[in-house]
Amino acid sequence: MNTEQAKKLSLPHLLQKLGHTPSKVTKGGNELWYPSPFRNETDASFHTSFIGGKWIWNDFGDIGGTVVDFAMRYWECSISEALAHLDQYAPGAARSDTKPDLFSFHQHPHREAVENFLPDRQLQLIETKPITSPAILNYLSRERSIPAELAKRYLVEIRYQNTGVGKSFFGFGMRNESGGHEVRVALASHKFKSAIDARDITVIPGSDPSDTSASLFEGMTDFLSLLVMQGKTALPGRAIIMHSLSSHARTVDYLRNNAAQEIRTYLDNNDAGQKGTEKLKAEFGDAVISFSQSFAPYVDLNDALRAMHARRSGQSLG
Image 1 (cartoon, rainbow, N blue to C red):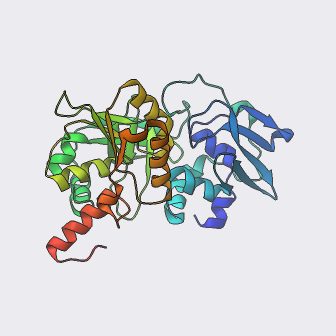
Image 2 (tube, rainbow, N blue to C red):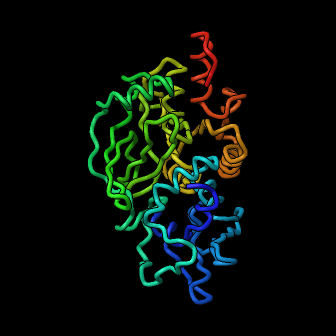
Image 3 (cartoon, helix red, strand yellow):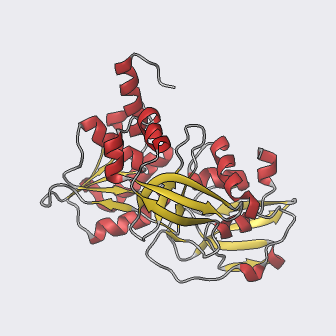
């Protein structure tokens, strides 16, 4: 799928497959309003409109654009990665000239998860088990510099089906606090990541019950990378894996309900990550200590870990 083909996809159908339902439909189905898919809210501040033969979107608390722009913002990725994500959903996403079936949108009760996905979501869990796949272990070791034993300690192997194409896939991931699973594929050339059943944070208990700190990470490989860099198999205090910056509100709720005297953030060295850090500082003040500069100039902890291993082996980082 190229960019122009992706722009012709129906954003309402894509949102439906991602588990988002409109709270208001106007202009004969040409404009739909939703609670923002980028944050936890009850009022509808996000809307998509059918204009000029294509679906565009605007978010009062964010930005706007085409279906491609939405995918880049939703999955926080590059254009090529966004197109790969859309390829996963394209079989079930109607083209722009197909109006959404308004009766196919069903309201569902709010839960504590960041997102709860509808029963017809394309990705369906088949099974989870301890990681045994050589492909996954080799990917984590060679491409991510994560040792196999550490990966086996915290990650699971996930088999799932994309009902849109009728095929089964496998990847690795973590169970989250809502009982869903965050999944990633073990391919260096394809950075697909998503959630199955529900998207939420993952909380990993620390090794010291008396330690009241919490360490905050955007992704699971960031958490594992810090352990490798520090030569540890566990952190003394709790680790919170956000999986997506859209989990900000859920993270704040958890931190409020589970008091942490010190909140150590390891968010990415980019605009989105630093905005996330500033939002946490606005909520918790001096309790938030950012460690992002500790792995600068690299964007994330895994980039820093891979660079460290490349230097040690005398190789350049690919």
